[in-house]
Image 1: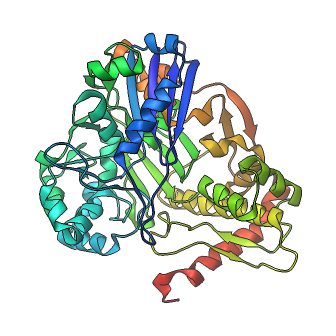
Image 2: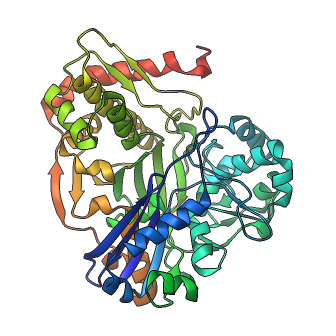
Image 3: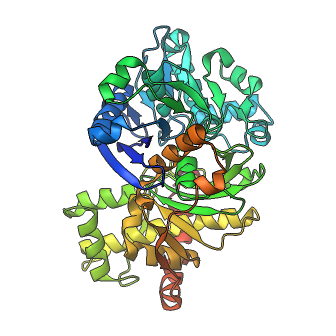
Length: 483
């Protein structure tokens, strides 16, 4: 058995796989996000540890006793600043925090070749600008800082005592020379740091340590090896077999991501496309990233009094695609690809006296699909060809939403059995690679297809005018235009 742990934004998921790749057990535990000021997004690192233990302990004890290796995945970019005693000095600043716009400008000015080295524009979501913000606004805490860890790597520290990370997650800090797969001394220096504050880097399937005895006892398993793992998107890709050049996936989690594996480093920062290391040796990937995807579903469900996501999808389907004049721009936390705009916020347009919860729900499903389509176009502009997309994440449970997305993309969607398990599945497979060896393409093969959704020509035609209106709306709501 192999255990995969995913430190998400809304919760922690633990998944046990047997040697055939079948899910033998899983557990989850919820997390909450604190927003003490507009545009801020923080979590208490201690909550990650409590939720991780709860998720692992939810798996059957007999399964836990059979675990032979553990992989970790997690939300990217979070800044966890530790003092000399390895305790957090402040709440972690998360990936969807938008406070460090000014620091991004300062960092790009200080490192003129930053985009070429990192493959990315400096955005508030990345870790490096967050530390510049702490340095400026909380200088006493910055001076006490000794280590900066990403969320999953703080959990690793609690598990093993090791300060380690993998290159896929670390690439999202903006401190990594992505082509070389190593820390950049120049960029670290520009944020007042050095490699002494950074964890040691590993490939995703390399072992970084083993469980502490007290953790092994708490979790009811042997002192098994722990592997480096990956950022949530890279690990999710491994879980559904996106491991070869040109393989692609769509992740419908809290955020929305289109991920394309590449055999080399292919940056395209001009359209806010991310280029990072994959969590497999010798592989990289491109991503378009959208800060609000399935989180919009939860938000409008609360707004309309729906019983949950399933109830909301049902209301939307009863209303039907393209039936109302409502338009939704899903920028609840700002946006990355293709706009790179941390200050823009979401909007409903075209409301009238007949607007009801079903039409609002439908507008949200369409708005997220259109935003994702903008990201796919940015990847296409970079020369990336996508013939189909494997779908993972909580949003993969809705086939109706898949029909809308396929039509907005004009690309088939492939739903895989177990795809909703997400990054935890890939983390477990990385552990299996580390312990048992083997070819990644075989160990990390795509799960069986459960459903394939082809773009429907009539739905493409119905949504096309609304997609055009959506693209005209962004310039009219963004603060960057002075409105």
